[in-house]
Length: 457
Image (cartoon, rainbow, N blue to C red):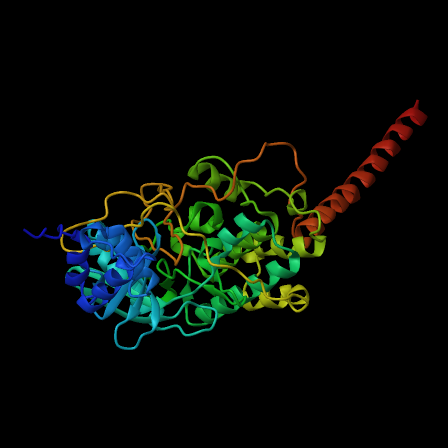
């Protein structure tokens, strides 16, 4: 009696998914059964792992798809998009790599998890889609499409190979002035395009600046964005939104008065991180960081990168002025101020991030939500009870108000402060001059009075 081939879960799920045809499975099995001694391997000895690996080698499926099929999952599409890989996860969004089944174009798909799909979250998600649809700039991540598959809502954007600025600095160390200027100038050009259309990003940070292998920088994650003239309709208006390490003072004390210069402050914090490898205020809780943004001056960047010039630091100081009125007012001015360094630089070339050894999450479907937090995701904590629930994820990670500091804590010592704005130094000089101008005549009058008193005796 002939043996019956053992049941293969992988073969069943692969066929049901529509990703693999029977002829492709047959060819893969035939290749695995071929041995150097011309003795064929029995079908029952071809394992699912071997078959999956062979199909990946044949480029029929990707490794991510193979892992999901072996786990018994058969749905790997959202509408006309086939999911090929997992990119990242944030507080309220997962990002997958996908390809359009007809056009063959690679893209990134942000998915709103089902367990976070409240009416407010869905409205914020739709708002993000409308926001990105109004922008078209080479230094902003473009939106291609949007839709829903059943009750799974998704946004389709261009896929950016490479890595984000945060990961690049963590792996390679602080950038040179020229490299940092090159990236920040490109980001500022993208933000200027958005600001001219009344849009405020509100979550500018290294993790939201993607750098391609060709050195092109693109600002991503416009999910917290809001148009100035639509503030009353924005459900997040008056709430503290952003990432704690890069929040402008006004985002903390007057969130309803946030303007485009708030993005300039956050971009200044990003520039600080780029050339120092440290966030402006490392260590402490989210509320500690918020207080220090309001009250303290960051450590001088030359403490971490002695090659940074005072002129360059002066630009950072002007971008990070606590009073919005004293801050650089336009992203275009940032471009002009950094131009002397950026014009002498070569593009910052990034590489694709190394994949995590942890198994990536599945595509949400049906009533299944993603409950666990992936090891690569950020931690989240509201600054106060007004903090919004809206969030977003870039093609790496995302954050609402993150308590996770972006560098290792460093030992507190008495460091030199960040060089203050020239206007501040001039103000100090004027105050000293006025004090001397008042005190010297008073001293002379007091001396004359004593002399007359003594002569009178």
